[in-house]
Length: 158
Image (cartoon, rainbow, N blue to C red; front, top):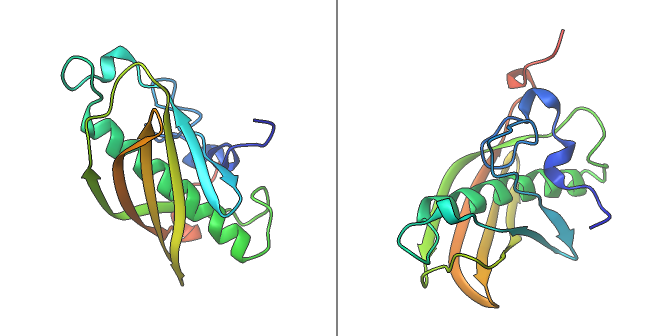
């Protein structure tokens, strides 16, 4: 993709998340983008992301929904304020609630598509619904309640 991922706009001080932090060398590096009114990410699980032979571990699926959801929340907040994601002050969200429903086993060895939709924006809270699909079939549905981090919580470099 030619566009920059939401997570790549996060300030260095808050870019260490295991799921989406660009500065976490061991992390999953979830990268989310706008696709019209929805958001999209692609993730290719590795063989060591296994639950049982041939299928993805459910905790990993929850993690990618979590990070895609908070990234979507941040992008939606910027859109709501009619601001570009590289403007200050930065907007960052953390998960207040994560609900995941496993619809069918998620196969290893194929790219997974994560799609998100903003369900509600109310003050500092954004609710995002998400799906994870493999081979065009929804395997997981989730909902993330994300809460905006107060600016005073974001550590600053000296």
